[in-house]
Amino acid sequence: MVTYVKLGSLQANATHSEAAAVAPAERLPEQEAAAHGHPSTGQPAVEIAGVRKSFGAVHALRGVDLRVMPGHVYGVLGPNGAGKTTLLRIVLGLVRPDGGSVTVLGGRPGHPETLKGIGALVESPAFVPYLSGRTNLKVLARARGLPNDEVARVLQVVDLTDRADERFAGYSLGMGQRLGVAAALLGSPGLLILDEPTNGLDPEGVASMRTFIRRIGEQGTTVLLSSHLLSEVQQICDRVIVINNGRVIADDTVSAVRARTGATVLKIWASPTDEAGPVLTEILDRSAPVGDDSDESMSSEDAATGSVPEAGAGADPTTPRVGAGSACPVRVEDQDQPYWRLETTPEIVPELVRGLVRAGIAVHEIRRERPSLEDVFFTLTRDDADPAPVANEGGRR
Image 1 (cartoon, helix red, strand yellow):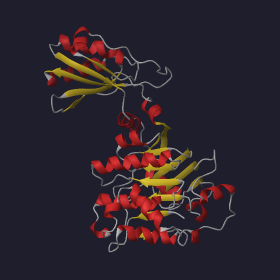
Image 2: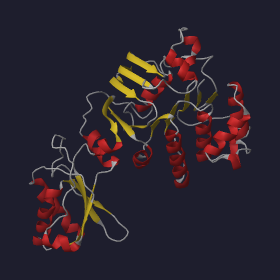
Image 3: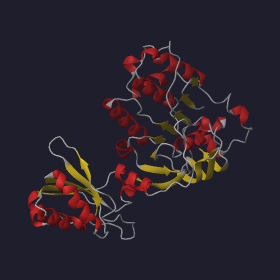
Image 4: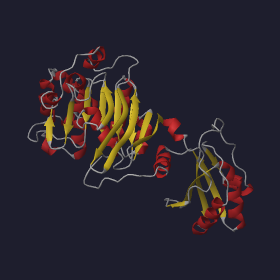
């Protein structure tokens, strides 16, 4: 049975609430595997086809197709209101789609047999405030017929053993979040769904969360998580799903998604810094697109001659390219010296250097980097226009 913790209530089991709304169904072989927490070999943990969901005039999901394969850690990314939370709730059976089909661990979303193999943390966790963290977990474990050893195990996984006997009311936001993840891990689910698992955590807590999510994935659990911390997703996940305006606009490995634009991020240290910006903008505006995504650094000596390190091989000529003039330079304040950051292509570096030198601007360093997941995310979502109404701040999608 699923363990999920939702804002405003402690819900240990969906058997009583959701089961009443779901007609009994014959238990499938895939569900036998799901009952032990793991889908059948080769079968998708989650399969979604043509799923649509609207809230009034707002189209939360528009024809979503997905196959989530077992044993991978998936990051679900998207701007606020993109539809990612709605998608996770549909997988859990908390929201019914308007159309399309959804199969989770070989069964229907929300069905008691399906829920046995799922652990989830949706929104902010809430527990009985006057009980300790350990006792809250024991209540959930007892409802599922799990031994106390299981409570001790999940507390250790989230590094909460030393504080487990304190009342939940005294927990910080980050500690409460970790207890919510511990509850989701009870019974070693085959599918773990985490909505913003690092919410409220300090940097040390974020690093710890990153470590054990990776560990869980390495042990064969399928993890589906949403997060606004794209740098963390890049380190934790091996696959990412990008949702924008209710559509899936990317579904691939992290490295493949990072290579989608074919662009290069340049960081340019030059002085006077303020005068360099207009010169860079003018050069970019008149330049033609090409492409590369290698990690390189150019010294001030290279810059003076207009040379650039050789680009890495392997770029796919069929991959869509971002033109040299596709993004304006952005001034970045650095502790040592401000620099200009821009997304372009490596072939234009010599022209940038020549233009800066002709304008009397000293070029100290040019650093070439492969675009991060965050860089590509902003490019993908920026280029994806929204033809539908957008949800207001009062309602999540």
